Structures are given as structure tokens and as C-alpha cells.
Image 1 (cartoon, rainbow, N blue to C red):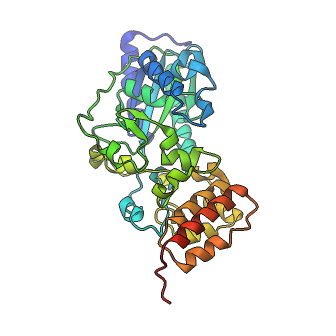
Image 2 (cartoon, rainbow, N blue to C red):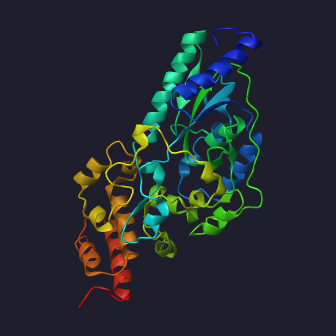
Image 3 (cartoon, rainbow, N blue to C red):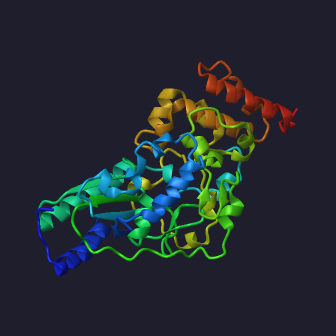
Length: 362
């Protein structure tokens, strides 16, 4: 840091930057100490158990993920921020999940890609800090580097890591994104949040694939979000039925969490539902060609999985849809798809449809 501030000046500045963060649309901003030793031990244990599945990027950078000063030399604090994303105008989640002819998209992916939105706001916050105190060292991150973001947010007092491994806040639930600014300024850290899950096991009980194998311990290899977003190859047969109509991600553990009764709908226009993705018809989704997929997912997080995996996911959902001639016709139209991955899931879906009695009129 090139500017020297007294302890009282640092405290005043820390209070001011939280106000600036709210002015930029963040629900809360906190300051974290960078000692993540306890979290690092849990991370290494999780990786050793193989719970990360094919997410090899979780192991690529060693312990830099849990040691901020090794990722960005000179870092002594991390400014953590959260931004609410629950769209106020979207279809009610359970109403979509309970209509198997529709496709369910995780609520975080209904609007604009959060990476761009948060990164721009955090950059503006960093620039405002520099204007106030002079040049200082910093780096902005939003899922763009090996960062243990939930641990840092917990250290910064933004919430605690719940039994489903998602960050929770008593006043805001869990429907929010996280971002960080690594800084070389010795700002006074906030008090870490304490856990308030108590005896509740709602998230463990609801998980369709039993991915939450114990409180605070998730096996990603069983998680629907992992299968529909992170996994590049075939979705394991044992999970296809229980995926239901979830075409991108899964929100069940958040939907049942009692703390989410305090969640606030987003006021950020970029996170409002777009292109009817809050309650889309599966046959319509499966009918998109690649150009339509790219158009409908422009600026959206869904695009990261690509067209091939999108068809894979929708094919599974169609296999789980109520049997009908229309569904079978839609699936048969993709039997000759050039992707072996798509063809395999289409064949599975057709077999699932043909095993069930049709409800179409004769």
C-alpha cells in the first residue's frame, strides 16, 4: 500500500466503503481477515475424498485457494460483497418443478451473467476507494480465480456456511452472489458470522440425489447442479430419473431452507428473468437449433455449458416428462444428431417414454 493511514482513519474508511457498496447495489459488504487455516483443512479433506468429481480446477492451484496472499502477494485483507439475485417477476419455483412438461432453470441463471455484473460493480468500488485514499494494491474476483469465496464471506460477517454448503444470512437467506476485492490495506476485519442452522435438516432431507451426505458435507458427484452444469460427459444412469425436469442446476436445498423466508427479491434489473426461462416448455427448448440457443443465452450463465450439454440435459428432462406423442416425436427428431452424447441421452429418454403408458387420446 502506498498510502499510510492511522488506525482511526482505517476504521472510518472501512465504514465508508460499506456505504459505498450499498450505493452500488450490494446487499452487504464486509472485510475479512485472510487466515483460512480451518477452512483449508476442510477443503483438503473434501478433495482427498474425491467429492469434487471432474472439477479438476479445484486442485489445480494447490493451496492458493485458501491462502489469499499466495494468490495475490501483498494481500492482507479481502473485501467481500454479496448481491441479491432472486428475480421478483419469475414463476414460483415449486410450480415449475411440479409441472414436468416444463423445464426448471436454477434461479441464479434466469438473468444476465452475474460474473460481469458483479465484476463491474466491484471494480467501481475499488476505484472509489482509490479516489479516497490514493493508489493501493488490489485485485477483483468473481469466480475468476482460485478463491475460497464462501469462507472469506463468512470471515467478513456476511453469513455462515450452511449444512448444504451455501452461505446463509439471517436477514437475507441465501439467494445472493458473492464477489471479492483482495487488498493490501490493513483494514479492520469484521467479526466472522456464527452458524444458525441448529437442528434443521431440511436441506439434507429434500436433496433428490442425497448429495448432502452429512451436515456441511456435499458429494458433488451426486449433485444435480454438478451433473447438469459441471459434468462434460454422460449423466450417470442412476441419477437421470431423479433429475426430473431440472435442465440447468438445482435449487431444492435453498427452496426448503427456513432462512430464505427472509430473502429479498433483487432490485437489480440485470437479474430479472429473461427469454421466458423461468417456466419454459421442454419441447420448445429441445427444438432450439444452436443459433437459437446462442441467441437466447447471450449474456447468460447457461451459455457456459454449450449447446451439446444443453440438449443432453433437456433430453433427460423429456424422458421424465409425461408420456406423449409430441414428446416422442421431438426426441426422435434428434436421433440422428451428430453428437454421440446427445444421441445416447435421446435414446435413453425414448426408452423411458416408451416404458410408460401414453395418455394421448387414441
